[in-house]
Length: 83
Image 1 (cartoon, one colour):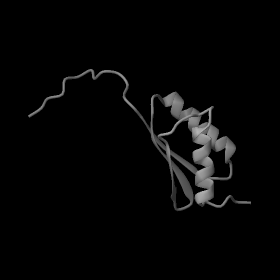
Image 2 (cartoon, helix red, strand yellow):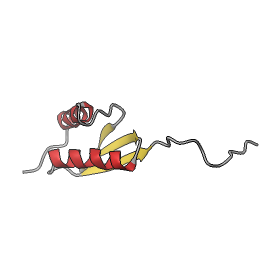
Image 3 (cartoon, rainbow, N blue to C red):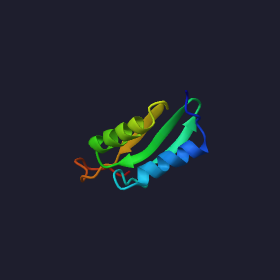
Image 4 (cartoon, rainbow, N blue to C red):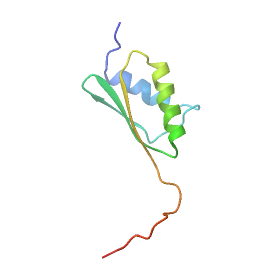
């Protein structure tokens, strides 16, 4: 049985993203054709992998694209030239 991609599923995933174990308010969920796309930014690759793993475990019948970026938390290592 295939899980229907609709606003209820999006809301359920958004709720999971904001619960105590994940607690990421800045992650978005969008439908794209036959998959759901997670977007936004987190502080580390490990955090991104944890979020994607938890969502995939909870919704194994849903194709999930994990387009979550990594926020640069350190100071830049190079000088930015302004012209």
